[in-house]
Amino acid sequence: MLKSWLFLGLIFSIVVISACQKSEVYDESSQFVKDEELIKKWLDSTKIPMLRDNNGVYYQILAAGTGTESIELNDSLNVLYAGRLLRFGSLTADTSSFSRTTDTATYKFRLKNVMPGWQYGLPLVKQGGKIRLLIPSPLAYKDYTVTGVPPNSVLDFTIDLKKVVK
Image (cartoon, rainbow, N blue to C red; front, side, top):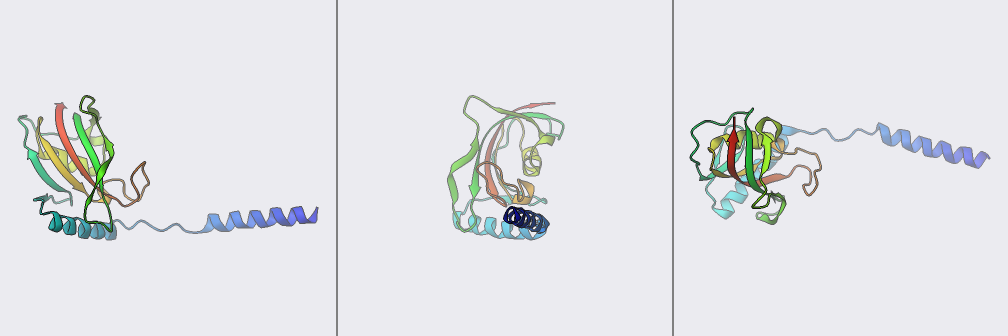
């Protein structure tokens, strides 16, 4: 009986101690610096011409689009997209997508409900436009684990903006 109580006490102590351990605090600004270094090295090695907006999103407009109205956060968008990882420790983008639409099924969403990188990048084109975005992790999934995406991942999206609904 005493052994059982000692064993339960030991288990309880381990649980309490492990619950008290601090998790590492996410430092967005230092992660931005790391992501920026990776993106710049990748761009230097690939020679892909991309611009950087004031928020830190790198973009390449593949087609400007023919729409006439500017895209706003409350607009609903229909897009086709492919999302890839720009891996740390590698200067080449993954050839496999972690997420993508099919050619026939668009992704429909309200711009204000998606990651900040999309919120900053998609208004750079009009309906019918196509854009490539390199999104630093603080403007994507940060340090969260998402299916197929490790924490602190820089994301590489190609997005075809099919429709804008005001």
